[in-house]
Length: 228
Image (cartoon, rainbow, N blue to C red):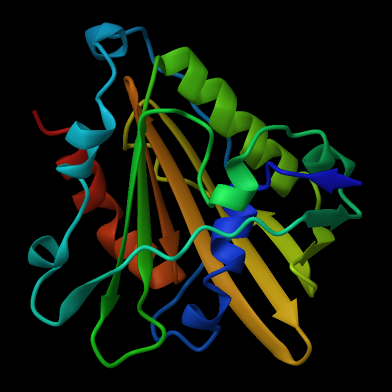
């Protein structure tokens, strides 16, 4: 079966060479996590941010310190994506996969890397919508991906064997949290990417990259994304 909505998988698939398993200090969590709801807050009722406003709240090289560089956005890919061995992913609809983003209309995205290193790429995605829509949308994607411990993705003629694992998200951050560890294998090459999503009111922040770097920069990303 074909699907156009593999959002988080596809955006990471395009960045496989940038996140290898030999990242120093990478210590992935081992326990599973689940979203934790919080009482209704005034932030949930605020008007969603526009894409332009969201752009100004993304991390940039100045936030991360000397040596970090902003990377130009990769061209959109529109390859057919085939998912083998994970029916839940096949049920997702929309254009998320081929565009490398989720289907929320108000969004912004940036990728930053450390100069001179091929293993230091961090991608941040910021979405804004009603709290209910954000929660339902990201839960559906994470539940589908982590519900299949192993599966295969074929995109543009390239086959990638996938393994997914729920991680313990930092429950002290935001209203809801999701986190997962994805292992990509093509031939003899394996890469590991951590993806952590935090929802605070009507803002959803997703940080993807090497596990140690996601843990290091997640707080900064959330602080800037929720600043007024």
